[in-house]
Length: 519
Image 1 (cartoon, rainbow, N blue to C red):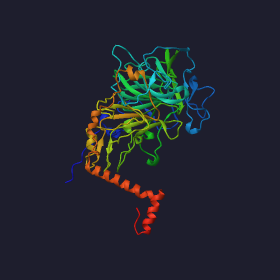
Image 2: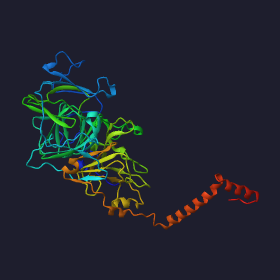
Image 3: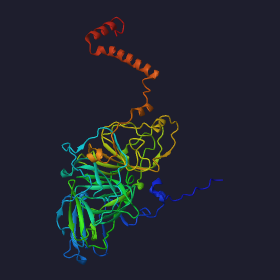
Image 4: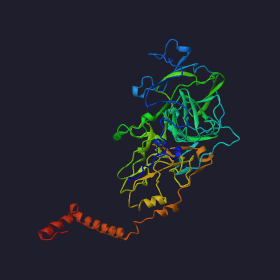
């Protein structure tokens, strides 16, 4: 009799899925996501709260329906080519220009955006480094996104439109009558702990651990804790003078990695109460200033364009891997990439390391020892991550500067060299790790090196390398062959003299004349 079919039951814990499809959902969002989204990377989307609000066949009519005001946001130069031309038209209750002026504000955040060697506030980390989970706010203080943003590292400066910055956010309060606007670069936000309810000018995004969202430069947004969430933590990668894109697939063809259809964009949403004083906090060249206005910034009744925040669920990543031999380079796990002025080297890659099959045979399947040219910052979102040490925990970080030698030394690494049968196996189950990889040399802030209280730059304990002894030097066969190689080399050197030494050539000629080889 055939074996009974094993019933496949839907998985309910997102941290335990092998892939999003284990949820067996008929919707493209997790069960607790309350919002509706539009789909598709690279589209010019449009949305309206009241149908018929968007102008037909033009962008700026003499009078917009309901007395709304037309406002545009341009991301690129006006005359940029179509493929790199980004803008959005918004139809709102009050224009953003209606405000009471700018002011300075005090903050508990630690923001640093000048990552040039002339800045004494930043410094390089030549060794491997690791951070324990970054500390959440204390219960006796209320920290929202504005005050809970802390810069870790970066390279370049937003003022010259070239570079990158890494942040962590730790918050325990929602932004109340407060919005944030980053005029320096694009934020890629990756949630690690706690669900976030993010309100943007174009609509709502619900962000959960294992998901990312991108909010473009100049777009206003508000970060709130989702119902039932007491505190939240996560990571942000900001790029200057570049933007996040899907990587080219090359020989993979049209599908794989992060598929375009899985990127979700908000639909138009308007606050029920548009009155009251609001504070708009701007980050400009790494400094905060704020303006006040007597109306909500989230008053769009309609919009259309391609400067629109979006989100992506990392559990939907369609991983590719070697199916025969050898370990594949981590670039095969790139979710999004940001270009730099060097056409052959990205400014930054955002990479995924989650559950997948490992099926290669007759080969060492784990990462080989390496000294990559790129700087690598790893962050574990949940489960047992891929950090520098066995103590690596979710909510912390791990770093290797470019060309810093690194690789495995665990028992599993040693065992891999002894495996005789290369059976297919699932790896990295029940965990999610992300990596920010950059061609730039990172400089680290004082907050990262001292202020957060979780930093360790102690090198790897040399004792761990006892698991990987020098087997070659004590191998009698290898030493015997080395001796033979030295003898052969000496003999070859003697034989090759005849080509360059006149005396040796005379001996060769004389020897042949006498019936000998003359060597």
